[in-house]
Length: 196
Length: 247
Image (cartoon, rainbow over all chains, first blue to last red; front, side, top):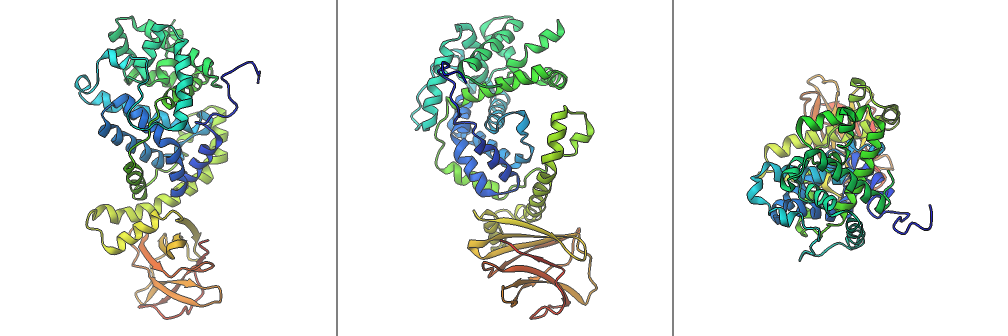
């Protein structure tokens, strides 16, 4: 690992081997292992739900559904397909997106300007400690994207919009949106030192 | 052109920004495109970082609510059968063979027990009897552990023990039905050879016996089952068909 790469840290707080082995125990029905998983991931799951769904009560419901889903399908986690944290956050994002897409999306979400805001608001609710580090890094790397990449990427992920909706919101051709999101995400990956 | 088009979907796929038939088409493409798969993985890990940046402490009450749901929710069995149905990349097959089989045994064991128990608690949710609440408490105990053993008469005995509560739950599947004059009796067998009655198994229904909750389990005790005259006896008169050491 080259010492000159400043942002690449040896151990990522979000995807250590711990969570993988905990999930193996959860798969065997061990509730104490599940509690440890909860402690590691609940803040991320809830935070993402809040970001996408926004309404606190609905976000809490989504977060609970996600965590229960982690318990139910722990046997299905396949470590060859990615980290445990990513598996969990994929479930979380999908549930959150399902919630906003199935609901009357227009009234339940704020308008484009709010959703596309790059600033990650500091909520009145206490933030978790590790989030501050992650937040700084993500902010820095988002700042390195072009405005158009950043806008498309944050609308899709934090806004929970499909790329077709993003295309409509930004009035940009779908092919361009696909490329913009992919290019932006690849730049984020490289900036944050994610090993693929 | 088409292939290139599909490849540019890695980003929107990693962000869940693609739905319906388009998503399915891309997933089929992924099965035959290792480079797409690798890229998707890296981009999904990247999305996880985006999620980490908005982490927020959940309401305090959420933990208790989730743990309570977990205690009464049956887990899914692992997807071992799917590997026979469709071809997978060689790495997945290796993984399935190495890991999924022991995982399957573990998951199914829990599912069987929880399934039996859930049958009760769901039916009468809200009006649970004292015994059902006690069963739920054993399942929810932080130190709850599950043990399975084949019996000498066929079938499998399952014990979920909660050492700190000194309680356990016993269920079985596949035990043969007994003549009317006979019954399966459950025992707590102490280290000194002393056996204490722990209940009679109810008649077999659907290949299973209803869960029996017993207390008085101490460290080092074992749980055994014998075949006894109807009504049970005060101490075992036959060789146990199964003995489980729940520790």
